[in-house]
Image 1 (tube, helix red, strand yellow):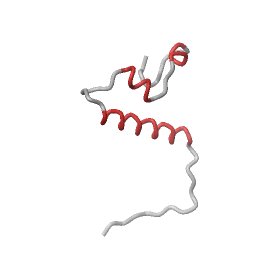
Image 2 (cartoon, one colour):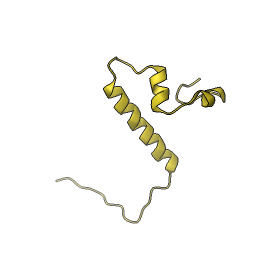
Image 3 (cartoon, helix red, strand yellow):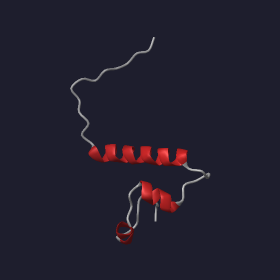
Image 4 (cartoon, rainbow, N blue to C red):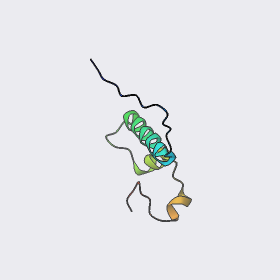
Length: 65
């Protein structure tokens, strides 16, 4: 028997966390569809919708630079 805890009356408030989860999911989908062993940095930027203008503003948390 599986016990499932139900939480009633709660709403997700952290929209940033939801956006991060969505982007992680998109990366997983892109990685599973990739023909090589790894995604290129350019493909990762494309999936995460990172533009050249954003890269010029400073370090990107996704790249760690």
